[in-house]
Amino acid sequence: MSSSAARRIGIFGGTFDPVHNGHLRTALEVAELLALDELRLVPASVPPHRGAPLATAMERLRMLELAADANPGFVVDDRELVRGGASYTIDTLRSLRAELGAAARLCLIVGLDAFAAIDTWREWRALAEHAHLVVVQRPGAGLALGEEAGRWAAARLAGDPAAALAGAAHGAILRLELTQLAISATHIRALLAEGRSPRYLLPDAVLDYIRENRIYTRAAAQTGDTD
Ligand code: ATP
Image (cartoon, helix red, strand yellow):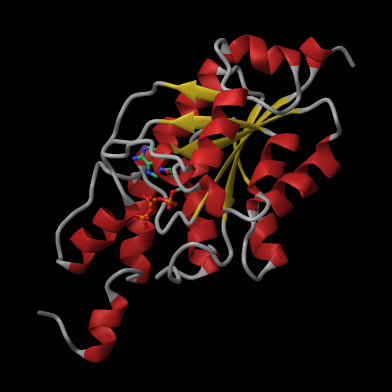
């Protein structure tokens, strides 16, 4: 297979508790700008850097499926849920690389807030041996990398993302400027817990599912604490 014909696969991991339009708009714009063949949304089983999600793994998976249904290029990849335990991105990249072959362009999408802590990820230097890292701006997030991670990132930063992607299957850091949507799952959970509406911050189908299953309101209901 010639390098120009190599498949381009985006990988967007997260807790997705719940998935929202900040994720989906990011995924769509990256897919367009990098001419991706497929964008995989990968829910984490137990995210290593944060507390347990409020929704169950199956609920987070279902919400992603409902969101992905609207876009034929989006695929929900449940390998971290199937694997169970702490979800390390390096394990996911190794497993995708083994499955998709050496020529595939793997593009790991990381928000700037997550990228700023990249040197806390397991085997973080090895991430670029399996994928390109696509770093996307997030409202309110600044970039303050540690010294070693800063040097590592600077050495890999691509001046021309399209050329870097055409030329290699992994190894570059691609910075993309996208539409900024100041939406977070934390804010959506807080709105729901207060009895307010998060409508237009996430797909209607996801919100309907959340309401039907009382996903972010059931703890208050269970304790009888509705204040
Ligand atoms: P929480 O508020 O629960 O921490 P979150 O909204 O940050 O959740 P995650 O599932 O933790 O969502 O994020 C997964 C990935 O999506 C991360 O790389 C994060 O930087 C990115 N991301 C989340 N929200 C946005 C947004 N509004 N714009 C761009 N990237 C985002």
